[in-house]
Structures are given as structure tokens and as C-alpha cells.
Length: 116
Image (cartoon, rainbow, N blue to C red; front, top):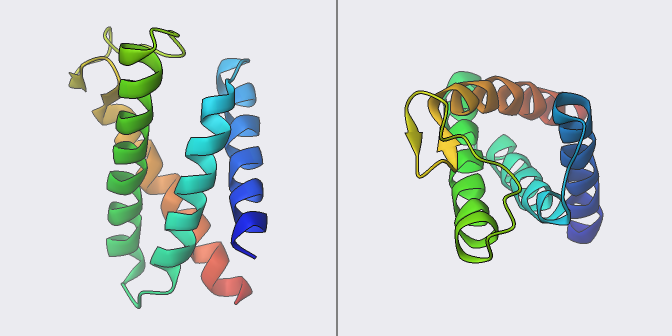
């Protein structure tokens, strides 16, 4: 079941990127799978929705930072660069997207709780 949720999350993440940026990368499938498993886990922890949403935003941002450090900084694949955004860290994450991830993560967690 974990591999199914990983694939659903990876596919969803890539589709979201295609809609938002019109491009994606295989590393985003991996990041998305990890993030979706995190969201499912958070949905089962008994947190209030707003706490789970904040945890989701921080967790997704941490995954993006780790993947970005490997893919963009170490391998130099230049999949994304947030250097031009305010409050960025090494061009890999920024405050704007952390806030957006809190919202999307909260919605996903609410949906997961409603389904189960």
C-alpha cells in the first residue's frame, strides 16, 4: 500500500508542477511520493488541522530543500531556482512556497481524514 500512495503522491506532484510551471523533473516524482507519505502520516496523528497544515508545510519544505540541495546544488541540474524570491535559502526554498505548502498540505490532510 505504501508504494501505491508513493506513486499517487509522485504523480500528483508532477501534475501540479506541470500545471504551475509547465515543466517538471523525475526528482519531483520522488519528492512528491515522500511528501504524500508524510501527509498521510500527519493525517493519522490526531493533530488539529491547522497544526497538521503547518507541520505539512514545514515537512514539504524540508523535502524540497533536501532534494534541491542534491539535484540543483550538487548535481547542478538546475531544476528550479528561487534565488530571486524574498526569504529564500540557497535558492532552494522560499517563504512564499512554504506558506502555499501549508495550505495545500492542510487541504490534502483534511481530504485524507474525510476519506478514512
